[in-house]
Length: 378
Image (cartoon, rainbow, N blue to C red; front, side, top):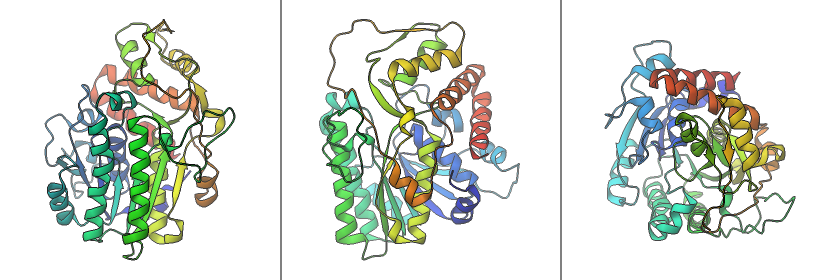
C-alpha cells in the first residue's frame, strides 16, 4: 500500500491535469485527487455509455465545474474547499484546443488516461483508435515540450503492449518487446514508443520526469463499457438475465481499479521528487489474481447472489483476442515497495457491492464508492 499521508502531503495544492477524466478510471481518479487536496483539471470527451460513472458522481449536467456535493462529503463539509474538478469537454486530437487549455492551467503534474480503450472496437475503427491513442499522446507531449511547467508526466498504457506469444506460465517484463496485435494494443505500443522518444529527446533535459504505466485489466463498480466481462455481468444481474460469456478459458491479470490508480499517483509523486524513479512499469496483480473469465464470473455470481448464473454458448467467431496474458510486477514492488491491497475475491465483492448500491440510486452508489475508498486506504 502506498502511504496515503505521503501522497496527501505531495498533492495538496498541486495542479493536476487528468486527460480522460470522464472515463471509468478517470472518474475514480478525480475522487482520489480530491481526497488528496489537489486542484484537478480534466480534459476529455463525454463518455458514450449510458449509464456513466462520471455522471453518477457529478450529475449529467456538468459542463465546466462540478457541483460541490461530492466535495463536501469527501472533506467533512469544509466550505472553504473549491469544487472537485474543472472539467473541459474536448477532443485530445484537437491540438489547438488542448494547447490552449494546457497553457491556461499550467499543471504541475500530468496524468494521461485519454484513450479509445476497447479491443473489439479498435477492429471496427482502427484509424480513429490510432488517432486518439497515438496522436493524442503526441499532442499532449507537444504541450509539455512547448511549456514544460509540469514536473511529472505519466502515460497510462496497457498490459497488451507486449508481443504476446501466450506462453504458459510466462509473465511479461518491462524489457520484453512491444508489439501489440490488435489496433488498440498496437496503438498503445506506439504511444509507449512516442513517450520514450519525447522523454529522451526533449523532456528529460527540460527537467520533466516521464514514466509509462502498463496496467492489467481493471474492474470495479461503475464500469459500463461494452465488450468487457464485468460490465456484462452487471448488465445481466440488474436485468435478472443470465450472463453470456464469450471466452470462459481466457486468462487475464485482473485487479480492482483502486490498485493501479494509487500506483499511478505514487509514480508521479516519486519521480517528481527523484527523477531516477522515472521509467516503464507493469502495474499488475500477483499471479494468483490472474484468473480465467469463468472463475471471474463464478466469483461475481457468488458475491452478487440473487440466483444469477452464467453460460458460455456457441457464439459466432469474433476478432482475435489473446487467450493468455500475465504481467510480472516485481519492478513496481522493488522500486516503490508496493503490494496489492485487494486480491481478486475482494475486488469482485467490492464491484458487486457497488452495483447493489447503484440499484438503490446514485446517492447510495456514491456513498458506497467513498466507503470502499476509505476501506481500501485502511
